[in-house]
Length: 420
Ligand SMILES: *Cc1c(COP(=O)(O)O)cnc(C)c1O
Image 1 (tube, rainbow, N blue to C red):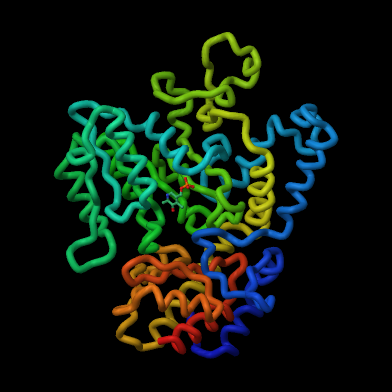
Image 2 (cartoon, rainbow, N blue to C red):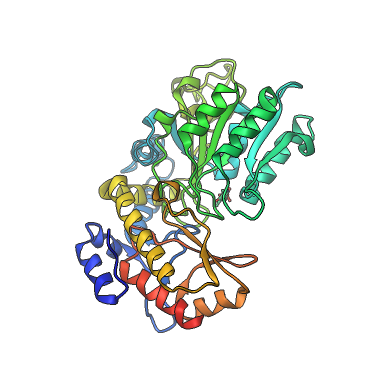
């Protein structure tokens, strides 16, 4: 696609955008004078869909009017409420509905998955993660390693960018697997990487791990609703994610979890259990032994928070309507436009860390500004651009295809130019 650096071009792109009507379905945050901000933080907290209030109202009313009977008699009965979310969520991550469950929060799900898929032995106990893994993931992994009686110092292997580079290279992961071989129990990769915006090849990494006899899991916090991970076909053992970033389901909302179907009926698999993972026919017959639901639902612990799920449900309805393929298509174009405008600044203080190959990134660009400090981020915020700052010198911006416009992108780069 040929881009132009002018407002008329940006506006024309918005006119032709097949997803243009979706912006109106979201509340875009505003400044003190009620002017819409340029909101590029959908990678951190997505904007609120306007229908969310209605979905939550429904459950509040049913709770008020029906009390406990709402479990069966609510307009959307609470008992099977989470089941309604599996299909639209599975569409988004490219899984079968029975491989996906919405439950808990991301870090909790990561722990639950490690209980099932990290079974360290003296011979095979190592875990490989990216060196720039999200801190929570690193804490979770280290604590699991210690809890199983191993020491993170010789058990946690970091996949690092080379000296002087910002991105991890696949061939370096291959080299790690070759070097540590049978001592690797698990490859756990954050995909898309929260810092660099790099999207790693799921199928290749999965095959690499499996050929080595290791388990493979992905953290899709920055991937879900952004890139298309095709989880079933690509075949990792598990994946976890949250729903408050690109999935716009509200602050601290629930997490999602994928367990590949090949593990569903494995009776030897270790897991932490709770009553919501129990066979539905005998769930209330609480005295018999545990008999897990033979789907991803078998990993559930508790009966779920319906009010939060209502927000997830509202958001998934928008994704189902817009279609992940269309979202991804716009994402590549609008992020390409942002990249074009940044490059066109011709400012040698600025470079983009994120890969320029669209198949290796989602919508986020991580922009490095030499000799900048946090005051640059403050100036951008004062100029009405909501972005995210990472020490020492990186601005992360993510044009979310459902509600960001080409005009947003154009205006943002104009304001950055003025500040610089
Ligand atoms: C956002 C994010 C988290 C946050 O975890 P919560 O348990 O939802 O608080 C964890 N890991 C990654 C990679 C993230 O991007």
